[in-house]
Length: 386
Picture 1: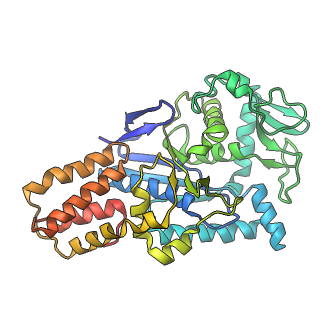
Picture 2 (picture 1 turned 60 degrees about the vertical axis):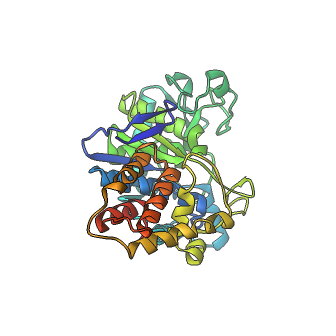
Picture 3 (picture 1 turned 90 degrees about the vertical axis):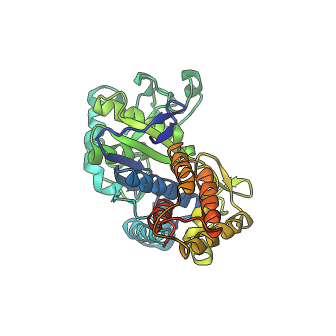
């Protein structure tokens, strides 16, 4: 049985979806003002191999990715290019979809724009206001987190630690750590008229509303980078609980480590990014997959072209093995095949998976029989093109 590390419980747990044989997965999508870099690719490749393995185990997946097109960065990019925010968002969304294709990612079921959900976002904020958990302050709407039970549990923070954070600074806030839900105090050149005032829905509520609109009261996996634990995912969980009335609306919180460049987080703002389309053009998506899978998804990874090229012999061995497959698999290879699957079941232990695959391929080169079906199955899970 698949066991996944749950950031909420800090432990590996058996994965049993809410609905039999269907896993609903929400991935925090990109803010569409630039191209996809390797850090983003690692996130989507992690959930791609998860989806591929779930499908292999007879579980269908519904993977939802939200496109953050209501954001200051999108506005700034539009202003730089002297164009409309919508055009910027559409251009980079298309580039994002193109990059997913370049990486061989076919597991994403739905890609949606946050801007299409603004009326629904308004209605969800209204629910929180009616429960007297959301409040107005100088035109903005905030979530009063002091009224949220177990707030800080996901990010493993005490109330005292939470109190140290100052978020969405503005006049009239009841608590420094309160989360903004609707922003009327800044002009981003793209605003909506609402009963709260002319403004924009804020980041955390955007994701919550999109997830509720598509998945309802609960879903199975919430995914994204580890850095989103606080405040973004903490706020998302609180809002989801308060709106739906469910204490555990999300079964598993699954977080991916950062990709670093020269020891620093790979970031567009820092300017140390490696663009996916350039990397695929130079090395191909298969080598990128093997490189990223050579480290466990929860660990940070310091990008190195040398380390990427170190996976080339394994890729060549895999393709060489393709030419040597048989009609059946020798019994002597079955334990290694089981270990391949068992490692995937152990919180997607891809470094161990690659080690087992390498030994299997080496045995085939020495004359041991491996069936085409078994070989193709392993390559399919890893996303290696046959």
